[in-house]
Length: 498
Ligand code: NAD
Image 1 (cartoon, rainbow, N blue to C red):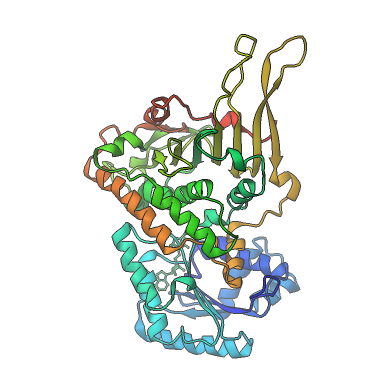
Image 2 (tube, rainbow, N blue to C red; image 1 turned 90 degrees about the horizontal axis):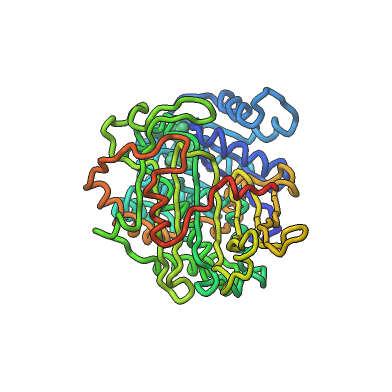
């Protein structure tokens, strides 16, 4: 499809009464509708609960207009929503779903294009995909695409099984594996910053960069997801997907062109160059943490092992810090440090690129010696870029002082920064899979992470809980960098405004 053509499709959302559908999918679709990005479309919401079409439409309305406001655009939007009560494990119910799909396809002239969005627990993904094929829902005249939420498997083995199941019904280029970080404006901006600026490109290698730090910290605890999180932990929940994806965008070679295949194949090459860390090396390169109780924003919060559905003796990590080495010509010797955790001091996702020190610091005898140049990419909640330079101190002195050049995305675009899901849905409707993860990336990243989890699962961490809620993680995470002569740049010094 040409980029300016508006997409037409039947969108089936499995799990349409769930949290993701209500909080992200309906509002994102509504944004696209309001911006006139969509041509003809209709939506079938599928979930187990029995609801009438009217009740379903009301729930969509509530999600896009929570204060009950209504107008003709909202009415027109929800008129395209239909509900099908269906237990996805019940083989008999798929043919009725197909009948409804065919009816809407001809009624709305949807050209036989279908998107199947699986906003449900992952254990159902394989069964649904198999049924879609066996019951004829994928026999369409137009395109068929499967959008699948994380987690994609629990480890490499289960990911392979799942992949085999969905590949019976969809080819690789019809599968859109969501990593919502890839829909974020500033994550997409990593490539533009790198490949559209001649001042960075020549420096983007081991001759000029000393280390890269990627932090994604949350203040929230495990909330009501204890049951899921106990089996997952931060390594599977955050590192296998979002953190490694950001590293691959930072480290990839410039693609030959900006096509999906070229970009993905460069990312895959990063995963292939990622040094395998296993066995006794794991605890040298990786640190795990689990939050204890503490104070956050003036409120006392409980320890992880006191949360609902969590084993009081839990060995699950809520924090991971790691040192990744990319053994290729560009990056040999440059550590990529990552850290992510729950109940940390602040909610923030940032990338800090630290450049090497200048060969000789002429200012070290003056007041204020130079600090390293940093390029900070603010992903969330702030969006923007800051470049840390050294400039002359004002007045009668020769000393230098750090200055920051900042670009704040929000400041310029107002509140219009499109939500990640809106962009990703639009990409999928247009058939652009660039910002979704390819199977090769999934397989390689699971392979990497499995080596770490197999050590951690077999060795109980006796020091858990080992960081207080409201801090930046365990002491060992600081030591990981100190061993190499570095430190985590304190988040409070990296503020975009100043
Ligand atoms: P949820 O529990 O709120 O919703 C699950 C939905 O599945 C409900 O509509 C429920 O009716 C339906 N369902 C359950 N069993 C069914 C069955 N047998 N047949 C038919 N329908 C059935 O879950 P959620 O939070 O919306 O998450 C859905 C998926 O999205 C999960 O894979 C989750 O990991 C992923 N995800 C969610 C979020 C989020 O913000 N909620 C963020 C990222 C990823």
